[in-house]
Amino acid sequence: MGLDSSDPRPTGIALRPAYEAIRTWLQANASYLASHPPRDAYRDFRPQIEKSLPLIEVLPPSDSLSEVEIRTIMSEVIMGKLEWAYHQSDGKYKIAAYAHAALDHAGLSVILTDEEKRALRETGSQILPMLSRHIVGE
Image (spheres, rainbow, N blue to C red):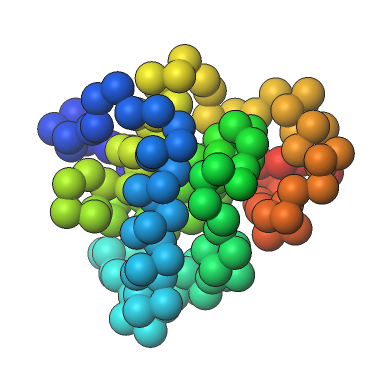
């Protein structure tokens, strides 16, 4: 389920500050949530959280990543390994609100183009091995 129209979104947020908000929340909360997973009426999020921990642990500061790497993390939140955090909140906004707002502000799609996927693979990104294959291709 996507964001509700009543969910607040940060306005005018750029990719890097949105990524930092997401990264900060994930790194502060994911380990705890792996042992105390959020539940909804349909599933236990523990398996998804545990699978995402290797990626979360190595997420570097935004100044160490290219724009396409940051966009890929936004895609992971919206439709990949980090989707379990979609409706989690840092007290201001839901994690997905940061991702959607930053992509919208930049006029970018959540889906990477084939050229962007190729560039991501060719640059040898340190996070590439931990990303969802349906997002980065291969």
